[in-house]
Picture (cartoon, rainbow, N blue to C red):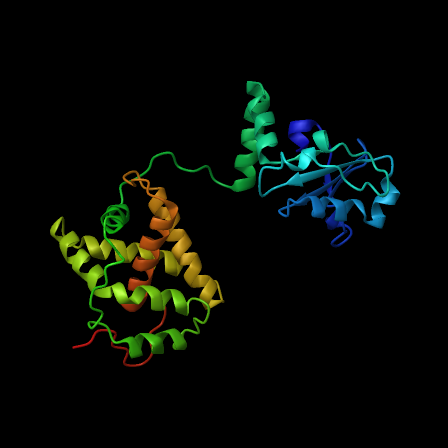
Length: 279
């Protein structure tokens, strides 16, 4: 915002913890700002009612929505209790309005903003995408009809429940329960997939295991599981041979693969004498 509008906003919460109604302040340009993911008329009215605004009557109050289009909010009227400067049509910002401002920049300011964002977010994303067996198997899985049940007799559900309890996976137990039933079908698909090349299924399972090992510093087992799923999803999307599919279908396929890797001992610790397959 400072780069786009030549402001000097500072984080007020750096000096005073959790100040109501105000997140950012620019004393030079007399601006106070609230940044919120709750983009409602009630939220803005609540902010305008806070007593701290009485100390900033000569300031302009701006509201920055970081969750959704706020165009409807600009048409409302608000209870400006402390009579700060606030024009909803101009002083409510959102992602859409900010991106319009970015799009209007000339080349040098745009380069400057690009370098700033790249520095904030870390290393630039590598534009050279590599082909991935993970993406190929996702494409195969996406063509399956998962509403048709296949026999789950091949797995020992008692043993899998024992592993869930052993790893204290309380919140994601329902995810594992929902998708462990697909073990036989995934096993069949992996067998067919391996016909395409030596140990292709091992490549996919190895990718999931590496994402698990990279995230092992996370102490909460449920968050660790969800992080692995999210990272596998991002790795899939970043592949050169990824064929875009609806996000709900992609998440379904990822969950099936990660749960299958859990069942097959590739991620999380196994209890003693763990045997997931029925003989």
